[in-house]
Image (cartoon, rainbow, N blue to C red; front, side):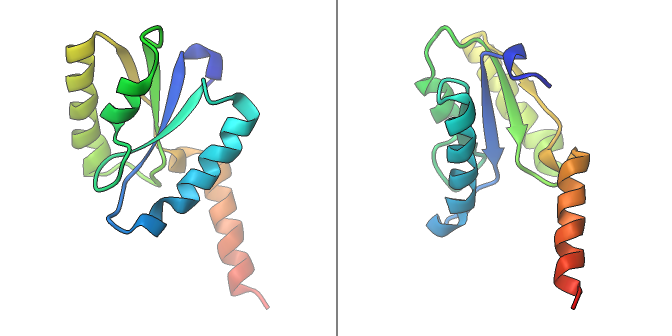
Length: 125
């Protein structure tokens, strides 16, 4: 996926009522924003945490019409099969946007390899 294929990418994490839970996602997003610019990437949460996907989209300039949602999930489950697509459809219908739901970050070989290496490291001497 090329960043220039979309007007804006929204990183989507699950969410939690615990405010500390979102800190790693905010650090990751901040590091990415330093590299590609705030105009290109935002962070949203599916539930229980703000900003929501709707909040982020509402904050974008109206010129941002072609959006991508990159789930920071390890695998496709009920949320990515049903909840998030329904949420995106509702936003698309209401605002005439072109929002693409990308595969979750856990589908990326580099992410799986990094997890495997971390586990191997922790199991080692």
